[in-house]
Image 1: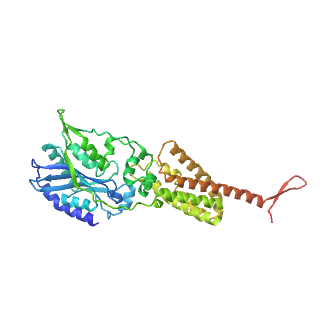
Image 2 (image 1 turned 45 degrees about the vertical axis):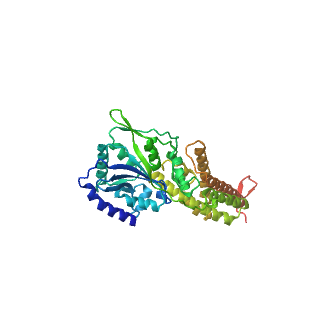
Image 3 (image 1 turned 180 degrees about the vertical axis):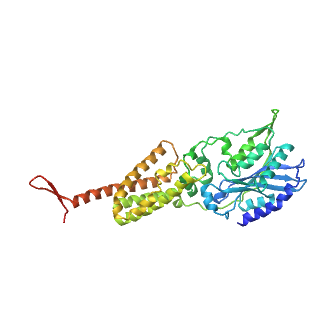
Length: 415
């Protein structure tokens, strides 16, 4: 909250200065700032901003499209629904760099090789965007974020076109994102659960620049082609403003990683299945289905009601079923056994379809998901077999058959 207030006050102070007939001098410099990832979730992918430094007028400011406020009314609900509004803020470069120094992030600077008219076009566009009625925008993690906005402003101000030269190996959204979150992290595990099959599409060069470091690399190798066909580098000079300080990290114990935890649960489920302790497996299954059901509810909501990209068409819902939550409660009611039986038959079929979807390449599942999938399948098969056996035994115990002299079948309840 303090950060949001500080940025708002600083922006309020700076805006009148910048809006009063400001013009570049010939020595003005415009550059792209790229910040390396931080430790917090919203810092994991880095950051991009535009710096305008004019030594003649003494103005040295940063235009930052990545400002949001956790204390906005219904912030978390809006975030889940994909309705978070970000804003453009302007504050002095010294404050900006100090913040990223405290985060221990690297800050790279790439000076843009723009003509004076192009610089003026860019600044005019930024100031127009900073007007109170224009500064807020609906954030989209992939298609409209703190990296794509600066890129678009720069490209639109150029008299000509930008030609990108960097060769990059084709990659999917999921692969690109996992490079920043870590393949074995809980964050990536969670993202893989909520991401649908759209996350496994190959990303185009233009879209790949939603990641700040990708934008930096692309700009470094890019050229500007003016209307006369003349070619010049987009970046005239590059350097590092802040270097990262050496940190000592303790190795993340593998026992706390998703794969270990999920495998442990699978082994525990196998043991309970083998020893067939009625009380133990009922409690275990109830917790298993309730927790998986809660996860399924989140995934279902994102898939059908959220505006976030990449979360639609999610095959994880085949095994992470929201109805598991209800099942976890019904297990404790003996009269519900017939419903449990039919649901478990359906559940086995859906889990099988999930595995088929993965095998067919429709969607990539996180490796740590498979122990959970096998565990849910194992317990569903066990419940199906046990319940069916109980039905047969009950039918046999409740009926005794004998034939009278007329050949009629009479039924009597066993005493």
